[in-house]
Length: 241
Ligand SMILES: [Zn+2]
Image 1: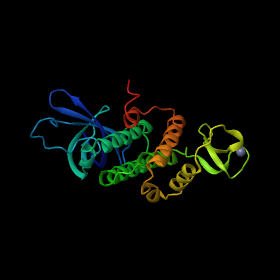
Image 2: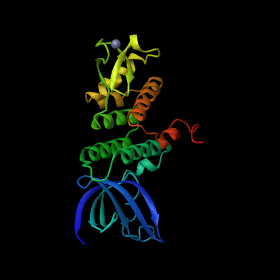
Image 3: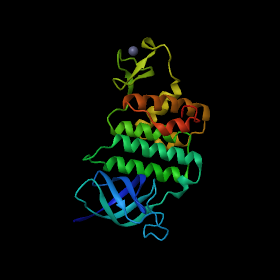
Image 4: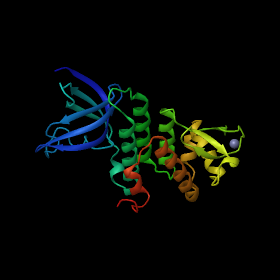
């Protein structure tokens, strides 16, 4: 067996046998990685609490023959323990790892997604924002090449964008839509897409944040043809059943 070292972000964990844990991770240099942490569920495990979801570790890994590699050592880079302590942060962090899991595939270079996700989780662990998920989702859309073009209407070129066409990833003006979205929301999306994420994360208008999130997450789910399970928890649980 050969050994490699890489930074891992733990997305999910699964029980294996009596005492082991499988970690589903993305790595900085080796794409998506699944490793077995042997004995991780024993109370005196050498991995301690270091192999939980949202944790970033620098790891030594034995390359296995099949799908599963074996974790040999793990040093904590960011524990992000705060994300397990507050329900709102826990749900947002769960949405982040669900998104990361769903947009990442075996054999892909995930270094940019790795940077984005680990930075987002570290930010969330120290400071929550009502715009956190929307900002993260827009940044993922940018990475995927699916961010909406908001410079002008995709159909007629008018600069007054009031809605989004997720099929073509462009904005639309008032002429083509019946239900426009607030201009403040379009401005917030523009700000994130040109890199002014800090300003949007610092905004405190909760009503506007809710509208922003509704628009962004609907666009996100439609563009990527996915339904986010953790998002229904975030919306208040009414859609769980
Ligand atoms: Zn138009």
